[in-house]
Amino acid sequence: MTIKPILIHPDPRLKKLAAPVADLSDELRQLADDMLETMYDAPGIGLAAPQIGQLTRLIVMDCVKEEGAAPQPTVMFNPEVLAASDELNTYEEGCLSIPEQFADVTRPAEVTVRWIDRDGAEQTRDFGGLWATCVQHEIDHLDGKLFIDYLKPLKRQLITRKMVKLKRERARL
Image (cartoon, rainbow, N blue to C red; front, side, top):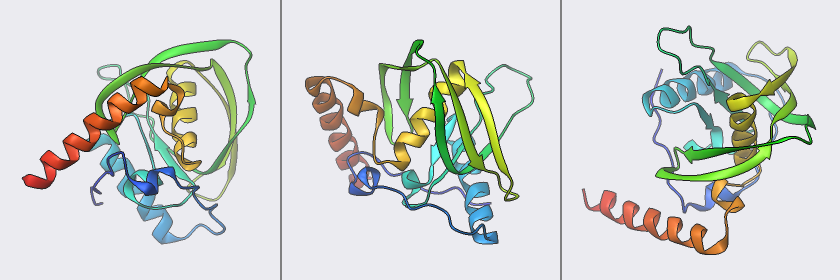
């Protein structure tokens, strides 16, 4: 497995629509494995293919955070939200493409999601709590949307300026 570099906002690839996966291939399964490795290394709880420059409808996530609990790596090709609750939850979200920046985002508290797993089988599952927030956040990436797009313009611009500065600093190293 290979740890991939994660794109930092602003990057035009993070604002593009990802293409659906037509056929699962060994290359796509390897990409999913590399994404899991990258996500765990970061460390994060979710990663979408556009964040590593691949405009493919693929996300990985694992929201198990309890010490000693077994990990639950989840790979989703072509994930889509089928239903969302009227009840809302607000979580402080962060993003591997927007390091060290966090903001409260309100989303449906529960969602039903359908996807194709790494074996090519269709799956449908209800998610709640952190899992619901994470899956919605990652699916947003596939549609070219970042969590800061939910924020007021001034806060979004402030975070974007910080990311431009971070990218300049990293380029000097």
